[in-house]
Amino acid sequence: MSQSSAFQQVLSAPIMGVGLGIDIFDSQPDFRKLIKHHRSGFDFLEVYSRGDYEHTAAHFADIPDDVPRTYHHEGLDPVGPALCPDGPIEGCARNQALLNPPWTVEELAVRHIDGRYTDFFFPAILNAQCVKATVANLKALAKRIPGPLLPENAPYELVVGDMHLFDYLNEVAHGADCGLVLDLGHVWSYQLCVGKGDQPDHAIEKLDLSRIIEVHLAGARIEPCHGGRIYRDLHGAGPIPEESLYLLRELLPQLPNLKAITIEVEDATEQGAVKQAQQVRKVVNELRPEWLLNASSGEPRRATKGH
Ligand SMILES: [Fe+2]
Image (cartoon, rainbow, N blue to C red; front, side):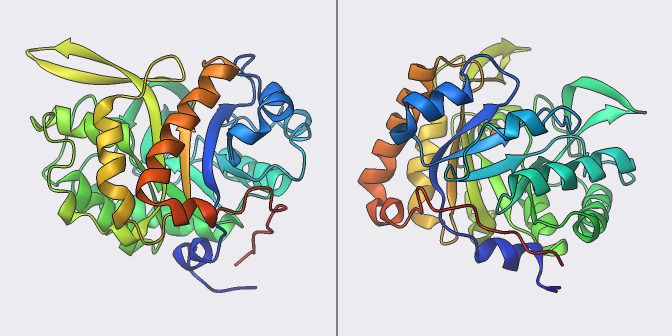
């Protein structure tokens, strides 16, 4: 039994490269077709199952062992005032055992209220109390889920609290001693909320970039709202905003522990998904080609260690 922290565990994971975030229940893109016809278009898959853990085994079994994968869970609600129920925790552990990913992603949001699913991401309230609850939840989850969790900054349509998002992320990452997923579109969604939409990287120097293990990119739609603008995730059903690509170009050279770049492509055609991966790979090739060379494309599944 290893006693290492979630952060230490992900630091020893391989570089995964540029991958596609897919939903196993989507008919488009169909991950089976992506694997069969477009295998050279991505280095790994980030597998999302909508938090389901009762109907996943047959789908997961269709991902061959030689396709590297990470896992995106949902339902742990780590920013809530108390630890989530046992079901999602046991379900997360079960899906991890089936997929054997080097880490598992979970949004820093609440999606369930009193057991009911909300169609809205309630993102973390940005204050000290929420930091305390998030850290306590992540520590409790780390004891019950074998592989390391990587919390992800959620999309913001409104911001509540007196902390800056980057201070909140730092305090969570250091408090729970874990890495982070930085969703670049979600960073911009926050900037739009706080009046910094024209500066997607505003105050980025606050953020401890050594904690960023994975970066997310996705298509989005920007809607006018009360005199401002609001970010709506479209994933594969829209173009990646230029602001997200700007953040990618800014941050790529500054992320010493980057191990994965995931393009979330739910609802894209298979060709569209691969095209977005090419678009991102081109940026990485220009700015950090040696990182791509180190990506372990095709490396067999790496075992996660319990702790
Ligand atoms: Fe994301």
